[in-house]
Amino acid sequence: MRWTLAMLIFLPVSIVLYFTKASPVWLFVTSCLAIIPLAGLLGTATEELSACRGPAVGGLLNATFGNATELIISIVAIRHNEIAVVKSSLIGSIIGNVLLVLGLSVLCGGLKHKIQTFNEDLAQTHATMLGMAVISLLVPALFVRNVPGFNETAANPRVLNLSLGVAGVLVLLYLGSLIFALYTHESIFRGGEEGESSPPSWNQGTALAVLLISTLFIALESELLVGSIEPVVAQWHLSKLFLGVIIVPIIGNAAEHASAVMMALRNKLDISLNIAISSSTQIAMFVAPVAIFVGLAMGHPITIIFTNFELIAVTAAILIAVMISIDGKSHWLEGAQLLATYVIIALAFYFVP
Image (cartoon, rainbow, N blue to C red):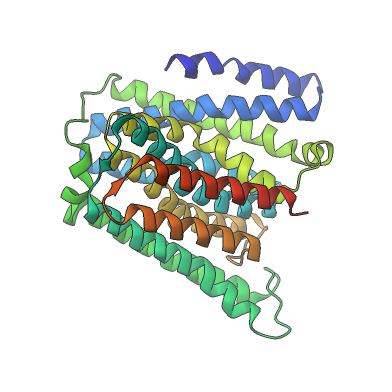
């Protein structure tokens, strides 16, 4: 919590830089640094509110607000018509969670505990959902790109309707997964968290106030961040693809990174796995469909057709994550393998023009 409060200094700094017409690069950097503690506060407020309201409501809150930062940034980027950044950041969030977050957790936990075990049933459930996420991203692109002369942009009503249809199916499946996790098979998902529950430190009013205030400030900082993307891309000689896939997701997921690694160090790898892979599933099956519907409502329609680079990267990330997590145990080398895959993917996106 101390580092969160310390980093909040970047909130007023970024606002001052905006009103003083400072360099867009500094505005981008400070708004990124301001979002990190705000995302941490949002996550803490969600957890505290969950503890106040009980496991059922708490699970629903976590399922809804678990990736609120990414969703807010996506909505702001849609409003600015930065569709490429939106789509690449969605892919980047999935890749970052299954490779960077899980990789750091497995590496750090493995260095301390040598061999760590986790619930195989939980891992298999997550693997199935991740497989569904890959199918939902790959199949539309494969079908559309194998039709000669077919226009794959949102201007084509067939592609837009296909995207809306797939988004609707994903939302329904996501709702089904919530029923599965919160009601019919909650014991599977709660197995690794026994002994972790504790009474709330905040009362319900405080948690709700922090949730609302942090959400508003994340929206404000997202406006500053998205508004400075163009000059940053030009000055740093980066592609929007790299910015969306690598930089933006790291900002939004920084708090989750810390939580997952801390749980792994405590030999609670079940929780780390749940944080990393559940977040990826939520991005693919909830945040991405919501972005598609929001884009249509805002007059900036988004399709579910991603670039070949993005599809290859997310498929590779999910495949190696599934292979490593399916056996119910891990060691530090598997974490290093996940991180190495992430670095290779990041390098590839860096050098893509």
